[in-house]
Every structure is written in structure tokens, then in C-alpha cells.
Image (cartoon, rainbow, N blue to C red; front, side, top):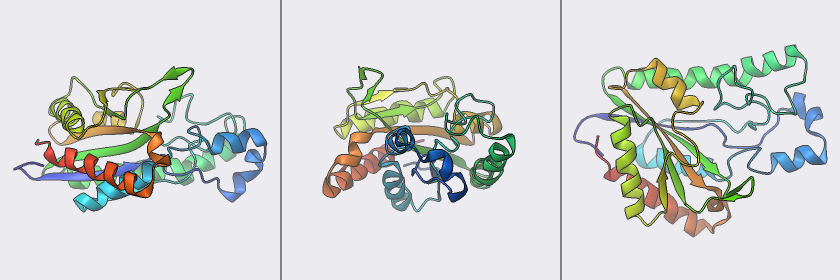
Length: 234
């Protein structure tokens, strides 16, 4: 990936749709079940992709399988989207416990990994997500999105090159779609904490039709994504 020492960290904030036992009473409705099993509850296929990439780079993998409907680890603590409609009206003590049990520990683990790996070299952080191909009536006709800060170098250089390499692998790939790379999220928070010369934070958004592919096709997708990342130099 580079002639210079580059560390790699993989994270997956929406890897599952688990609900802790002490919160299940708030998810006992048909509506809640429908949300949990949709893209609103988690990012289908994201954890599998993250595991493949982490293994390929022998990189640390930090992930969560607690549903984003319990708490969204990819939102800032003051975001209106931090808690879903199933949690936001629960007692303050319950919400506080959720933050102390799931949100802050996850954020702190990732931050500690970034600090350790970026102390003497550049760190590439890939945060793996999937997106729904149809959202609010809009059809998203692409396979992958690469999210990055276009004003931050070398991050923007890596992001643009990764888009090119993913396209070379046959993926329909867009930069900063389906979301802006500077929107509220874990990588955005980490950019504010770590110098651009030490930290490159990329969110990789994969069309969640990936989760419906055969195991053989999923493997090929992962291998092509890995090849694209390896082809990018920093």
C-alpha cells in the first residue's frame, strides 16, 4: 500500500442488531422488530466485510453488534440521532447507562487504538458501513461510496485514489456518497483529535445488496475491495 510505514485500523460501528436483555421491553412491538431487521437497525454485511479487510491487513478490528437503535456509535453525543425513537424517551438513568456501557467505551477503545498506532507513523482508519439501495424513494445506483474530508491531505488524496482503484475493480463507486465525508460521525470526531499527518479516516459505504449475494460472490467483492485498498499508496 505504501513504501512508508502505514498502520491500518478497521472499525465497524453497526455490525449487528442485538438488543441487550435489560432493554428488550422497549423493542417488543412489530414495528420495533421491523426496524431491527432493516437497515435502520444495523448495516447488513458490514461486519463480514470488516473482518475480511482486517484479516487481509493483519489489522486490529474494533466492532459492535449492539443495534444502532439502542445507541448510534457513529453519531456525536449531542446528536438528535444518537438515540432512536425506541430509546430517546426512556428515563434519563437508562440513557445514561447505555452511554456508559456501550457508547463511551467503544469510542474510547477506538481513540486509544488510533493514538497508539499513529504515534510514530501514519494511520489509515477504515470505518466499514453498508447503505440501503433505496432511501426515501431515491434509488442509489452505485456499489460503493468512499467518504473523506476533501480539504484534508493526505486523506483526500487517498480517498480520491481509492475511488479510482475501486472503479478499476469494476465497482460503480462515488466519492462522498451517499453521505458527505465531513458529516457527523466517528471519523469526523477523530479528525478533530488527531493531526492530518498522522490520521486518515475513511468511511467505506457498501451497497447492502452485498448481504444478499452468495457466499462466493461476497468473497469476490471483499477480495476486490482489498485489492483496491492495497493498490493505493500514501
